[in-house]
Length: 148
Image (spheres, rainbow, N blue to C red):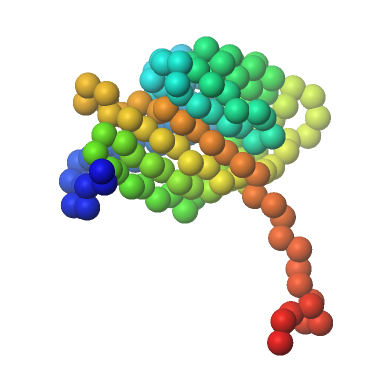
């Protein structure tokens, strides 16, 4: 059941902070910091852009280890951040603006849309889902293609 009352500003600030910590860990490629943010259980989920669904903490942890191992670094700038809290769950949706520095080759930029789901466990917000999908490039529409 969703609680219709406006969450206290302290709750909202706590969710925003843990979401910020997630992006700082991602940007720094810090596996230990990433591990501290997640609930370590078999039902957590993660979908990286272009990847299959990962189920369970072991698969999720391994995915972060592989991502961090194969990049020289990341630059992540979340924008359009929206937070919703319902009881012991919090949803954060945002646009991720990324620059990825691989070991070989030029940096790659990408824009993804993400949903991060957190569960409050013993007073601490822990991530239980990260789902990021690429934002398709929009094609310009010329005047002759518009519906009249």
